[in-house]
Length: 307
Image (cartoon, rainbow, N blue to C red; front, side, top):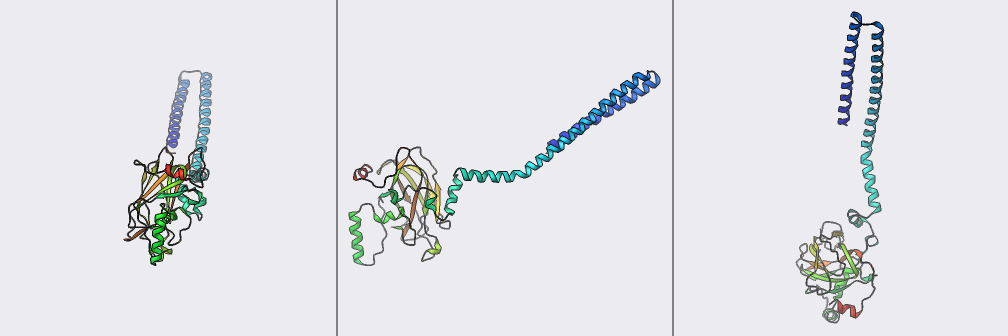
């Protein structure tokens, strides 16, 4: 806007200078005609100069009007620009889910209907193992302790850990393991190009103790080419905020070009509980690799291939 005004002032100054020169020349012609010249010739020259001055005056008026119109148009566009920017952002969010939109999904009531979870047990995912992690169980009787020992021996997949692949996050519907460090290896519903993950924990206000110090804090996600892969891909390390929303989305820090059928979650610390850590729900997000469909079951042969 300042540039346009300076340009208009410059044109007007040039025009004024030209008019002054023209008037000076006209006065000189009058003096010449009075002293030496022919009256008819001088009147003809005067008429030409007068015509030129009128044409330039008309042109300058048109230029001023056009300049004023352009300035008004620019002011109108400037005032409309914020609204246009906001509308563009709304259209972008509506047409293509962005990273910000993925984070906003957790504000909605039904998170699982908004973003695909490839670690969902009912869709075919399962727990492969929990490494050296020890499950934390409160035994109310010796019978309960005996049943837990028998189920642990007969079922290698740690049935308690399967809770993290199932809907339902009421207080106690979690996988509790001793201490603040643990890990779990998950077979997804298919080979997935992993783009993010979600961790869910109950909010403090529905906890019987009104606090959630057993919530995981620092953790890491890895992609494995097979169950015992010695060189897993590191998707990144993250921190769950116990004062944040119950469902928290984490975008991978180190994307991989390969699709992974097996992922491993490692928990390094919790929010201060001295006895155990609780994992309520783990979701894995991304895109299923082309040319395959999710499998509802896994055969014994496939299980052996993952070892």
